[in-house]
Amino acid sequence: MNIIILIAILVVAFLIYRRYRDESLLGMIFKVAIKALSNNKARSFLSMLGIIIGVAAVIVMMSIGQGSKEAVRKNISQMGTNIIMIRPGADRRGGVRMDPSSMQTLKQEDYEAIRNECKYVKYISPEVQSGGQAIYGSNNYNTTAYGESLEYMDIKQWEIEDGTCFTEQDVQTAAKVCIIGKTLVDNLFPDGQSPVGKTIRFKSTPVRVIGVLKSKGYNSFGMDQDNLIIMPYTSVMKRLLAQTYFQTINVSSLTEETTDQTIEELTEVLRRSHKLKDDAEDDFTIHSQAEMMETMSSTMDSITIILVVAAAFSLLVAGIGIMNIMLVSVTERTKEIGLRMSVGARSIDISVQFLIESILISITGGLLGVLLGYGISALATSLFGLPTSVPFWSVILSFVVCTIIGIVFGYIPAQKAANLDPIEAIRYE
Image (cartoon, rainbow, N blue to C red):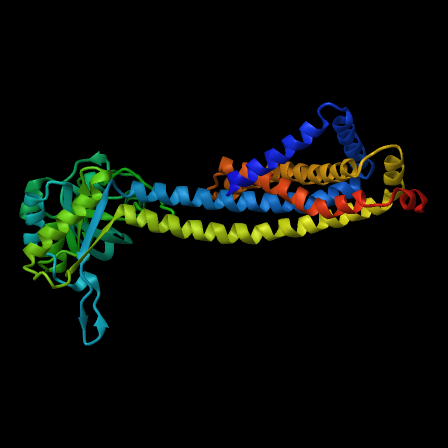
């Protein structure tokens, strides 16, 4: 639609140029239009002000919306590569929806079946969680312990900054070892000493710190990604929770392109492992990272559209303001129009002159609005840390809209000027 409108504007511009290319009138009309606007600088600027504010508002809304969407996508991608999450299905007992984390449909047998049978799975890690207080000496901090396998580090793209990761032997023996995030390091070891080799307590269970994770900071949802403990999943299950089922199974597909095949494969293997009949519903749910990103992008797009539409209403008001000013200008210059017609100016020449004045006001205001929008976006990023990104197409769209506003709202004043009777116009006082 935008391309069609742009082509239409270019065609109109070409027809005007073609009509006047063999004459010197076009250049003269532009000079007259510019002189008319410069003679009333304050009024011209006030006419542009609505366009400036409207375009700047649209640019800012678009930049914040686009920047937020890119930030969300980046943060989701930092959570891991090609992640697929398997959780227990929604069980209903007595009409009450059960908490998926308390359901027991994901077991060790499922984990082994996926590892052995799924060819599209690159990494897999069963997951159990337990919230509680981590304590070292007189220092304590609320955190979450994640029970994982070794491959979790690859799935979530975690790196060890100090120390080492636990081993497969630690998993087999449910060893009381852990890796901690930077937030815990800062709160449990504020004196700057290395936590590696130290024993901390989590929910009264002593665990030895063998490694420190490289910091990831906060994500766009405001969650501190460094406030965590990672332990062998067997250790959390046996020593902290005393349970035999998983809360989640995290999977990474071979590539992003094979995500759909991986989900189909996982569904088939789990249904077979759970001995579900063909007409039975799944007792598990599978979600991919791509679905998450698509949902978030769609939500951000909807919010951006709402904000842009709200800001665009100011452009409509600005167009009405331009039309009012141009009607006043026609009234003030009635005698001038009559004199020009009396010396041979055609109605089309008068109409084009006022259209050009209207378009100049609109496009100039659009240019200033784009610059103001860029400035506000940069200011929002530097002062408030808001993620902003001004898409180039939004700038082009702004100029297209401004041109349309200039033509549409300048048409009535231009026609009024063109239809004046020369004799009556000359007599006008």
